[in-house]
Image: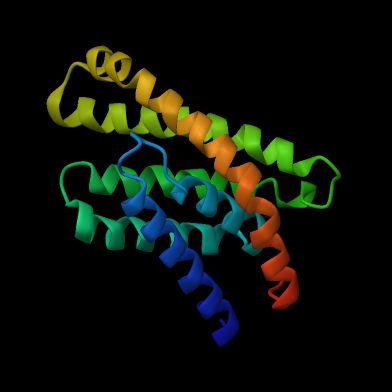
Length: 165
């Protein structure tokens, strides 16, 4: 791994962490999911998992650790693995809209993973899941909007810095 790639990953982690901390006033709207997805598509699934895991750990240093930390890391890592599988489409004309759709679905996917984790720990899956659906919707809509805003600038930074995309 080159210094340039480590620097890019560090920048992406810092944007994700700062965005996650400073957007806590809007429930479940955060750039972390989008940045993980964009990283996985442009830099590969492994780098997406790295950004996801480090971002969760660092942001939870501020937001607090709990029973949700490990499932968050698993959820965002799975999102990186799934989204990174679509790297071969990144040169298509309307890829940004496809990516926005994946980001929206990721908001609901994250909610299901978190509900399953809470079910394993506390029981009563349906009550927890149904109570979280509005928040998953906020997450999904926020992901779509943030993807449409951030994809092109991050992609152009990757192209200018010659990171292998």
